[in-house]
Amino acid sequence: MPTDLPVRNTIRMSWQRSQASLVDADQPAPSYFAGIDYDTTLTRAARPVIDALSSELTNEPVCIILTDAKGVVLDRRGGDRTLIRRLDSVDLAPGFRYAESEVGTNGIGTALEVGGPILVLGEEHYTGVLRGFACAGAPIAHPVTGGLLGVLDITTQAKNSNAVLLSFAKLAARRIQERIVEEANALDQALLSDYYAVCRHTGGSVIALGDEVFMINSHAQQHFDSTDQAALIDRTRDARGGTKPVTFIADLPSGTIARLAYNPTFLGDTLAGGVIQIKEQRPGLRTTSEGRVPALPGVAGTSALWRHTIQEVLDATARAEWLVAEGESGVGKLTLLRSVHDYTSPNGRLAIVDAADPASADELLSRAGNELESGADLIIQHAHLLSGETIEGLTELLQGARDGSIGRDPWVALTMLTGQTGGSEQLGTQLLHFFPRTVAVPPLRHHLEDVPALARHLLSRAGITGVTMSPAATNQLMRLPWAGNVTHLRRVLTEVARRRRSGVIELDDLPAECHATTRRHLTRMEALERDAVVGALAAHNGDKTAAAAALGMSRATIYRKIRDYGIVS
Image (cartoon, rainbow, N blue to C red; front, side, top):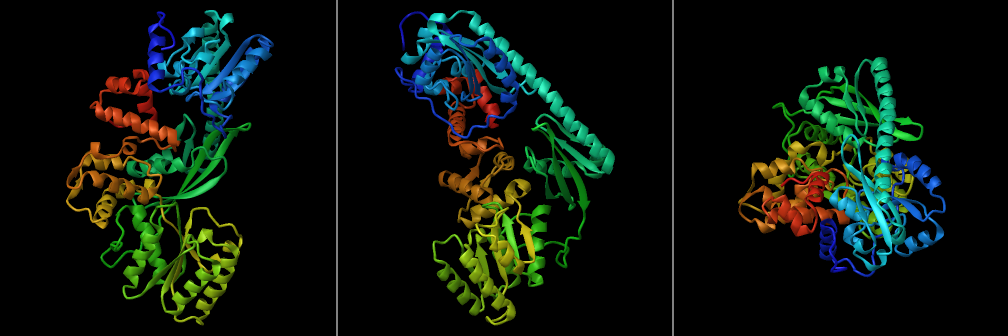
């Protein structure tokens, strides 16, 4: 402990957390983060407040510091030269993270841990070089959602400290929250104005999508049942936060195909949200003579979206059309193409050439040419990685195949990542004109109803028998965003099966990442923190107080972590 003198219980508990985090008691070591977004709801609302405060404190030995919800410094104003030099010497500057777990007890990190305002005076700091400061930190919460946005901290030298610092910090934090409400009202008004204008102009189905606003008009509610509405709402996640117009397709459970056109709404230079127009398309879904899409070897899933994707590929192969399977990494593009080929040409041979292989252009072209001459059909995987030299050679090779100068008329397909055209414009101008159709293979998050069938299929393909999924575990898997798609699901199931080789996989058997339903991308540090919280909850049978104590954090903090990460315990 820094001292044996009597201290407030809040400070003593902070010291214990700092000690448990192995914080250096002599010198802080805050992490530095580059590429921080300095244009957020918090920074926009705080800017005029900090401007006003700093103008009143010019050349005074007081510094105003704004951080995000993780303690990363976003802004630092005011202060005389001596104070600024001292703050620089301890890295209390923009980009550095002043979390309690990294620098010990301080007005920023400790305010975040306790979830309330706190004044930390000189000797109350955990690390020695910070004891020359006094700092008052007041958390800033979103006035509508209640979510923690950051901390407003007032720092001075310890010899200049007084109780007014904390009142000053709390008043500034309150004014920032008021500004957030003012900006939110203006942004919401701009969004709603566009929404009502589109509703009046089109008379069709419209959705308004903002940070705190989600509206779906009566036309959409009348024309889509509750299941389709849920699918539409899930599909709009891909548009949230977009600053450019975009159009995308949603295959709904009813079989309807909906075209969603998103247009952003701005207030000045600030994004207020966006308006989505929905138009229905109902193309006839071609099926087998029994009235259904055939079951294909090697793939699993019966959702309307997945069946429609299979049928698109089947239609193309039935007409001997060359095609491009496009989608995110891990969605099963190659697997789908292989399965359709095995179904439509059970006696035909299929060759796969991977553009990601470290072979030379000559080697890749030679292999592709040999396969085509031998009578094989061909898939070129990762075509977006093809070099300009290879594209020129392939263009000549495929032209020969089309002209009949290379063996029989083969079937050829490409796989590509969504939105990628490679490093050369030649992919689009020379190669892709051989491929009249592009089939979008959907990410797993767009057909989560296929997860149970996929889980059974993947376990079976891995040779894992005698293991079944409990309803609770299955339901949890269906709630996750699956950033790595089917490949991600396969990895998770393989990890589970290594520990549970027979019987029923229960919710507690799933790895830590499966107990959090947050859809935002987590940094490596956040993922480790999430796993630690999940592990502590599991070790203490869901007792949040005991888990918090084991992790050295307050009950308020663990509840916030559980909410932020969407942890299901």
